Image (cartoon, rainbow, N blue to C red; front, side):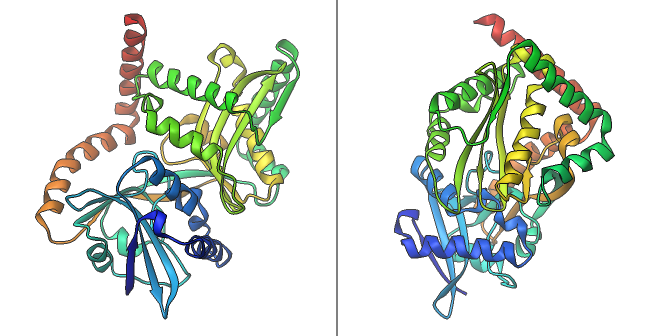
Length: 365
């Protein structure tokens, strides 16, 4: 393989255009999983703007780029997927039929190990290092919103009936319900981040928006508007008041759902579910094939999904002491987390405990 590693700023406009073309070509040729926004050059460039150590390996055949591998690298040679911990889709973007050797790729990138937690399906050279596979639910809207809603009605009629009734009640009680699929008001984005930050604290989770670089990254993506990639803020209003919002990213084929939140004052109306149905309608009108809800068991995802994709976590390694040390340090943490999240008998008490911690935090302020 002819592999060259670049800093993102060293990639030319032609390189970026080739990356987007390879991504769209893969989608057109039956690999829709490669159309995810987290695999786009736009996401990699945004992360590089706010985080150190971002690199892109470009694989060429006969001088033409056939694959792009974005990653983050430490000085010791530990590699991580771009945005590990934030990204819901990871891997190598390649032309249909391209094959590669994982260890040869790592060697060219100067990596002893490459860690992933949302590896896209079909990456066999990397999948050999997977330690587990997990469902990642999606909402299919390729055939239009009415077809999607029809699917939900046939599988979960009570869910659809109840959610639409709550939307009508929200309109009667609060004011006319209005949805903006592509909201350009940065103030609405900051409202969303405030809601999400409060939700993290309330449920005992780590507050991502307490990290300035993540706030800056989201605002950077909000202002990113490219033909093949953009940030997307969607807002549900009632009586001109924002009730729920979501920020994610989209390519022509996929809307990646990322940060949904709502004003808890209106929780009885299930505004998050209403918002997601409106997002499905807006995405279908834009020609999107599916909304990717991301890995993780959540009741709302089970209600909204039409099917599951599969993502993997693990690491690929070369024989190297750095790889052995990294894996020995990370494996027990992953095993414990996955054991808790995989089993309701463990997950539900853990959720209750985290919410109790959140209440204690709130009371301490």
